[in-house]
Image 1 (cartoon, helix red, strand yellow):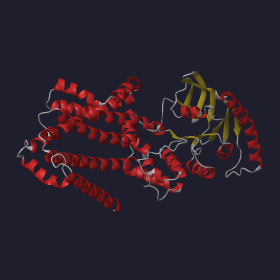
Image 2 (cartoon, helix red, strand yellow):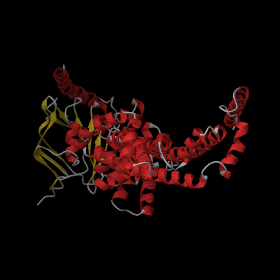
Image 3 (cartoon, one colour):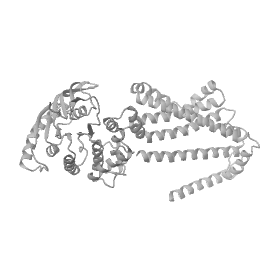
Image 4 (cartoon, each protein chain N blue to C red):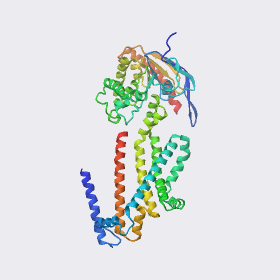
Length: 261
Length: 248
């Protein structure tokens, strides 16, 4: 028997109840993520990419279909296997950077000294040495997001789900954080699903890109990115890929805009 | 430091102005600050007034009881309505409407139901102190950022952990403000209750001195009460500042 895929999404659908009736957010999405793969979910805003991620993370229950993590159905959040990072860093303002990173470990009952050790070991390579005792309000946006990622990495899960983690950052910080994430990935060997609406981000980081349709979200196409790291986005292959992706995303974004008006 | 100098100067100027005004006017009705120490001496010596310490203890006891009940009731109702969404939707508008009614109108009924003794004062203190506590809990619950809750849930936090490690700290600065106003209003409730009708307590003594036109003693008592309340609120403000700094 072969080992099951770390993430297997099998025909999931989800609709949300709103005052003006049910709105289908996601319809019949299937996706298999291979071990240590970096897959991006790319699509126009409101296409249900975050919902798919939430379902993989056990935060949202699908109406139909199922999701397997290592072959076992998802019943709820599973901090032993899956860690999440959100667009909003969501740091606890009353905790120092160090204690924020240790939060998940605290919930798992890891003793204080060990938590400290793990958190320090994560903060240092993230360029946050000397900021361990700072509170979130004393950190820049990029630093806060790095602390949030460190908090997720601290759980040492094989799977990391990231929901537009750099979406709230400015362009420069965003590019640097992307480069940094490539490094983190190489060191930690995780399976990552990354939600984004940035074509550049998807091309720079992913092994495969799943393009989603406008609402209700389906998988329109899955595109391999066979480029070596570090990636230069001005190379011919990357430019061609960008054009191909843009053609698909443009069509869906137009449909999304029409759907809104 | 300079701020403190200015504050002292303003206080001094106010006292001088008060003294100057009082000296120009009828000394029976208008009492200047220079006459307060001797009046306070007379109050404490209890020559013409009932012994003060018993009344002070009674009032402090009433305030403590009223505040304890207001906090207990306020926290309970606040969390119940805040965390049980359906209950909150039913009762929160009622609570807001009740809060808009000037609470003094209830006092006569409290006296009718509970008599002239401490019970009606405590009840009035509870009534006044209860609302700010409840409303601050409700506001606090609404202010907990969703993202913090989602982060904690994604890391496997159960209901109790979520409450203790996320909600309470996230609500702390709003709640501590409500607890502080609740204390101030519980004090007001008990004192007003005693002033409006009682047989004992600090408010009763103030009313007694006023009724006998012992204006100097009356003024001394009022200043004493004001100083005590200011001290209490000062302590409250220090605690609130600490909590706010901690909760960010």
